[in-house]
Length: 189
Image (cartoon, rainbow, N blue to C red):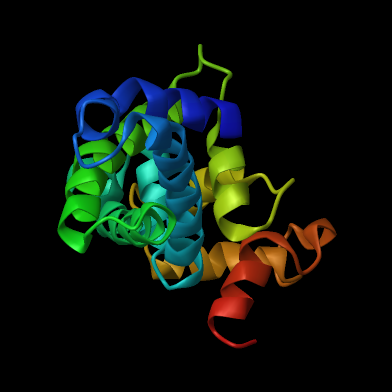
């Protein structure tokens, strides 16, 4: 996933980074690394900070997360990228946010499109959600699909799936990991 993310950042950072007079050419690669770490860190913050439902919706292309440009997840990730750019390059908050708003929505949109494309195996939803939650090896997409039996993903759906991951449902072999463990961490259980 890291390679795919960096390739997308390189593709989308022309005007924002490479042709930006506020970023000297010798710092272009540092800027792209800062954007990459900011995106990953931002996705982690969103997953762990109560925006897991929107993140899952974004990865699946459904619900309020389907519009990557307007998603609260994207806005949170932009703020994290802004901070990463300011710390790594020492640029102003305004310039860092300008770069983040130009690059992050496009990169996340393309990343989510790749995750949803059955013909593109460079990244999938399980990798994105596993990276964001720290729960690798979980069938996030299968759990989210089964949770969306009513056509939408909401907290009731997440709690129903979480019960399965925590041993209360038919997925007892999953133990306390996965979505249940993540939600248990979010809600202090």
